[in-house]
Image 1 (cartoon, rainbow, N blue to C red):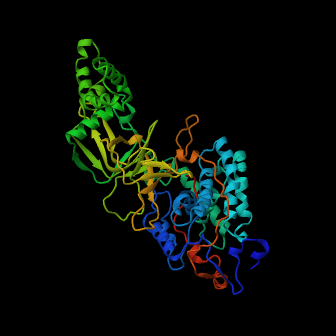
Image 2: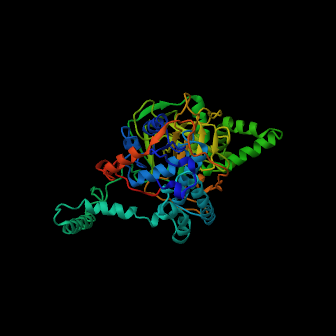
Image 3: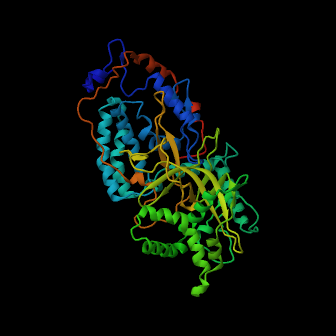
Amino acid sequence: MDLPDICAREDLHLLADGVGPIPIWRLDASKKTKFFQWIIDDVKFHDGYASNLSYCVDDHSGRLAGMKSHDCHVFMQRLLPFAFTQLLPNVVHEAIAGIGAFFRDLCSRSLTVEGLHTLEDNIPIIICNLEKLFPPSFFDVMEHLPIHLPREAALGGPVQYRWMYPFERYMFHLKKKVKNLSKVEGSIVAQSINEETSHFSAYYFAPNVQTKARKPGRYDDGGVRPFYHTSVPDIFSQIGRLSGKKREVWFTDQEFNHIHTYILRNCDDVIPFEKIFDDQVSGAYPNMTEARKEEMKQTQYANWLKYYIKSAASRQEHYPTWFEELVGGPLSRAMAYPMYCTRGYVFIKRPGITNRKTVNYGVVVRTDSIDYYGEITDILEVEYPGVINLKCILFKCDWYDPRVGRGVRLTKYGVTEINSTKQLRKYDPFILASQAAQVCYIPYPQVGVRQYPWITAHQINPRSRVDGVKEKEPLQQIAVNEITQVDQSVGDIPLVDIENIELEEIWENAEDEEDGEEFDDQNDSASSDYSSDSE
């Protein structure tokens, strides 16, 4: 009621009878229904990354309830930068997306000095854009706090080492030890001693005896490389574990030739022979175009290399046994599996029709010039006949069009968009499992009759694993580091939804909120076992 005294925006003032206009940032009933339905049907992440957000949708009260701290982080950092693109006016969407992208970049695993300076320059503009939209009652000390967070990160480093969530998880671990509620501290001490005793005793059991400390993870990759009697290239000795019911598949002539050539061209030990082939082709056909050379390499390189190795004796050259088996080609059949665990990821082939609440079939392959986004349709174990018996894992994928602007584009808030209606025209379905990183695809909320063709791609780091860091190579996804300057909205902003002619009963809503408890049992109920964690 004191808004006229502290704010000159008359379009937000209440009338004498306690009613006011509908603001532009409020979703009407139809859009709220579409938003909740989008969360229930389309918002799916990798297994183990977040809880099922559909369980947090309360249709009766029209709100999200029961979200844990990690769910709030996922919602703000992953969904807010694009969720309201078509549901709210552009000026409102950009203000909300700006604050979501700010916390996503701030909470990344690695931070750069230039990135922190950009965040420090952006956050005042982001807060000002919010102040132009929302009433003064929305802002308190917590809305002012983000101003200081980039400076704090510059002094203290990444936030994962300083926030309270690891301690909250450990407190939850201690609370589970309480058996006697009248002696809480004593119960924790007694159970902690028992836990330490069991861990100490576990070291005296044989390695094959499974204990609590040795229990493998849900998607453990085994941790042991395949054994060969001789040294082989890394693509044949990747750590991983196949799972599920296997089946036998037979390659067509096109698939066989493509797989054989692809493995040869991606084996480091064979690269010198590829250069010899290029030199011979260039010498025989000096006017041949690069596209024609690439086509010839795809169709004739494997047969040329096989003949080159067979004639090695005439040149008094000798090659190891595994190399001769590799050049000879794989078997025409392979074993297909539905699941493959490696490098902290769990890859599952794309199902036909399923009610799974998680998606693990999205992949991305990054090259120096272009990124390929696709979906796994099959997981194949390719085997080479011979004494060494080489084996490697391939993914068969359907690829989206990788051309920037046509099939892939990046928004100014760091969200990668994929055109789901554009496919890769070139026949190149196979990749090595070691080349794939995992992504999940989330569509936009459907507003009109036709589905929006662009979907968002989110690359998420494997859970509970940090790989070695190369010099100047960040651990977070590449899009996060591309922080752009935030545009400040100028001019007058209409704060009232002129299309909504209804008035809002402020008094009745306020009384309903006062009657209800601020923290009820439903909000305290846990929807997942995950607390906030670094991404």
